[in-house]
Image (cartoon, rainbow, N blue to C red; front, side, top):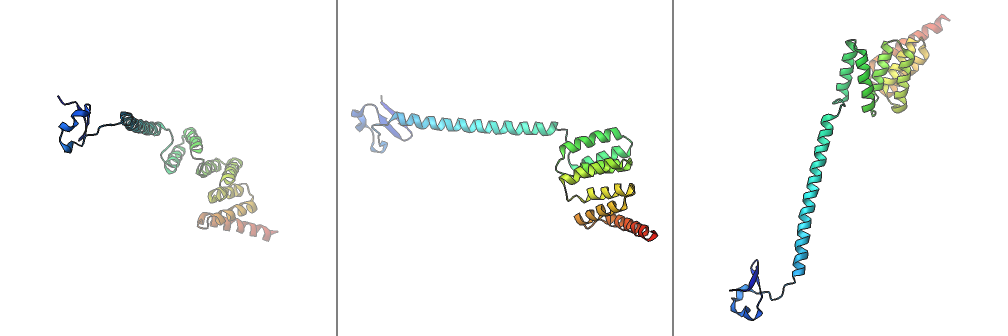
Length: 200
């Protein structure tokens, strides 16, 4: 019986005296350090296990992300949120609209849109001081918001303060020149100021 252990095409003779019995193409390896082979096998197995654990961790992370997205109450986009809130407000469901607006303000802090919509609602309710408060908070965070300046002008004009209104309309035009509503409002209050000074 042969007393050789095969490693691929290479063989190690356990009985070195009989190695001459095998053909030359066997290229017998008379001494192989089994400790090195064990280390190599160990590294290979650890690498496979590490890759499997990493892949499992990434998959679990992705699954958790998908679950979080699917259960998130945040509306799909700012435009959809605003449209939904405006629809509720127009239908007279103001309590629901206000609740949605509060949620929108929490989830969309990087945009002045929720505060602008709040200012618009307060203006429609003729709560002009609340309108000015909402626009002031918007300007503190977003100083280039043309909408905030516009609604401040509307509130001041409703409070019969044409000079302050003119300043706000001018600021809205400086923030965004393509605002015909602000331009028309500015012309109106300037005409009002001109008539007031002429009457004096």
